[in-house]
Image 1 (tube, rainbow, N blue to C red):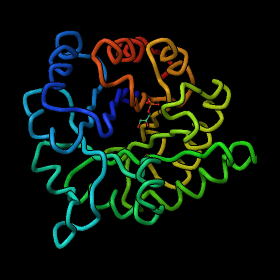
Image 2: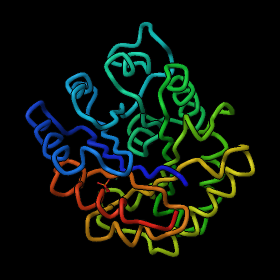
Image 3: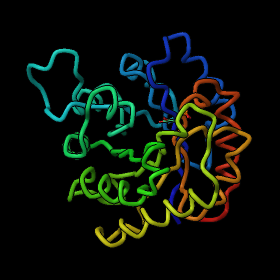
Length: 246
Ligand code: 13P
């Protein structure tokens, strides 16, 4: 039985005032039956120390320290109170040219600091339309996951780039196909690959969460826009608690 994970990625949103949303979420889900992860901007991580939820960074540098102006190391995230870090989000891959090798190095830096890496992968619309989704996924999985990954230190997030922030969601069959493919690759490569959690991300909302969580090998969600307000994130958490397919 895999522990279900509802993860919120606030991206570059959130000031101290927005932490009130976490207090509201705690009222309803302070002792939820699923893991809840919030990835606020790095500036708010230490201000989250009183929340019962797991806290994660949205990125880290691959080095522990050094002359890297503006960057944040995994050790710094852990020191500020994080226990997770997102790596390889498509917005990092696009905006900052992050390659699979960089994503693997950042994930390893996360492990070295004691963090769980949520390694993000997903195809673009062009790749989907060209019929290359599964080969793109294969390349990203092979290149982005360190050899030292295991079910304790790693979560995979499948986020089709074309579904992020667009309101477009793949069909349940499309999600099922990719998640089954990811599961097969993980079990081929890692002895505990069957236990690695795989999240779906991309336009998850309260209205579509239950059906997405009914898909085999979907072990939770990585939620962007709908994680910013407790009123939007709460029904997603409730749907995950009710999901019974794993
Ligand atoms: P949305 O839920 O806003 O589509 O964002 C998904 C995402 O990128 C989470 O990392």
